[in-house]
Image 1 (tube, rainbow, N blue to C red):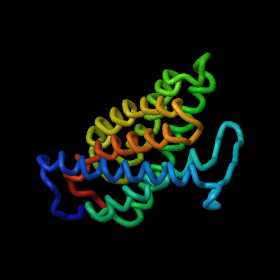
Image 2 (tube, one colour):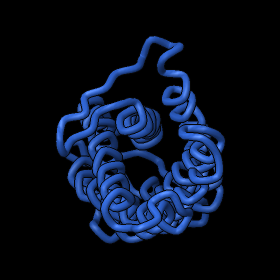
Image 3 (cartoon, rainbow, N blue to C red):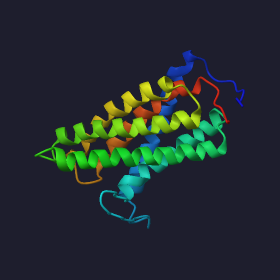
Length: 203
């Protein structure tokens, strides 16, 4: 069954993109805060089995983004509650994929693993992997055409992943990561604006 809902025309994409980008930037800032202050907030944890690494840096950004934008689709496009929760989990899985691809690319793919080039290139690879996985899962959850869910968001996620190079300019989880999460999540969120053009199916 398709839910009938008044959605903005394509001409409203630019306005929607700006609003979603701002919300994505706020999500990125909150993500960094949870990562950087996890110990003070008693939210710190670590499960560093091989090859899976579960720790604040690998979990909170994806979870925060998923919860925020699952709520956006729930409110703006009347996605069912179950599918909105599914989108939050899909975002978590997508970010886990992005983190692990970037982490292992940095660790194993470069002689100078602390260089901006190593981080930037690994961020592109991670962003591509994460955006592709979230897009594939989102196609099922949002019931939208693959080209709409995958093309612009995947390209944006990959390109914006290069901002990971900023993380080399200060201490671990410092202001470089703060800028990265704001720019990456903001850019990716803005690319989702066309997804609000069409009704979403709850069947």
